[in-house]
Image 1 (tube, rainbow, N blue to C red):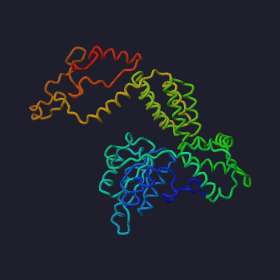
Image 2 (cartoon, one colour):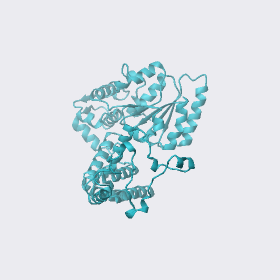
Image 3 (cartoon, one colour):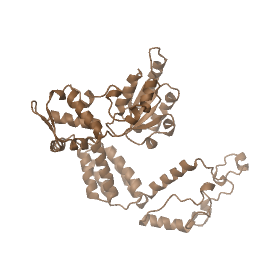
Image 4 (cartoon, helix red, strand yellow):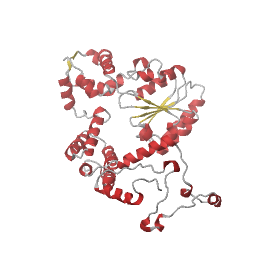
Length: 428
């Protein structure tokens, strides 16, 4: 079977590689690594189709390293350990020139235990880890692994890169170079590509396959738009349209428009989107955007995720729609989301401040002699199950992280806090 155009044109060297000049251009950190032959572990973070896998393969080839790849979708801890053991054997072999490279696609989908299983091999130099992710590694990759691997951001290809790629495909590909092209407009082509090289090449593949042999392949805005709209694969679960539609879905729910939310839900279902991906987004929406204004939203979102796993599709569309409409029509609050981000920012700023003595655990007599736990007041021994005392570190007394939004549920909670603590918490 003939390979897809994107695979036929996959770059083999840095000179063929498109974009990311901040990393692979003259003086770029990854180019310097390759030239020195010493490649440290790193994670490539960027949208689909910008060359993460290709760059990893180029680095392995340029440094004459063996290349192993795992997908977080299909590999478990057992497969990770098997590959690491194979890398250890290779590292001890006199025939191995560079340190074995282990490439993990979609590393953000690895569980904590899977990521933990990588730590030893990365730390002792058994493997050079190259991870690829479309999600922010700060949230999806465990801190011990992040401390052992630099993160490099890859950007969408710009219009100049896409134009170069188009010219290369039309002029150099074994199939397209035999066809006649009339390139009149590229606005729609580049817009639908969205900075994604693979998407651009997939569209060219579609145009070539849908144009009878012997006829000129016309590239203009009308033709590109019509061919994509008539193509059932136009949604492209891994491409730019995937991100545009899920963004529209999220913003419609957040904006309390159930009709728009259900429409974008239907677009994803019709395009073959993974229903568990949609259900995960609903869980996040329930916590991030509805939050304390309606805590039942998170319960329903979790129940929806559970239902999808139990019944699958097409029946799963019904609980997905039920949850989508419920979240869209619910009261909204992001106070919990903002509170945890503010607290994390404070931890990042001020570090590990000591726990007040009266809040510390005192399991031994020595700790009790040192004052651990002394002076703590048990809330349930006081009227209303509440007594004022200090809970924050000394230097953070009076700090407020949670700022309630105005809705019935949080107005009630805020009034109770006001009665307990007053306007400020300085008197803890």
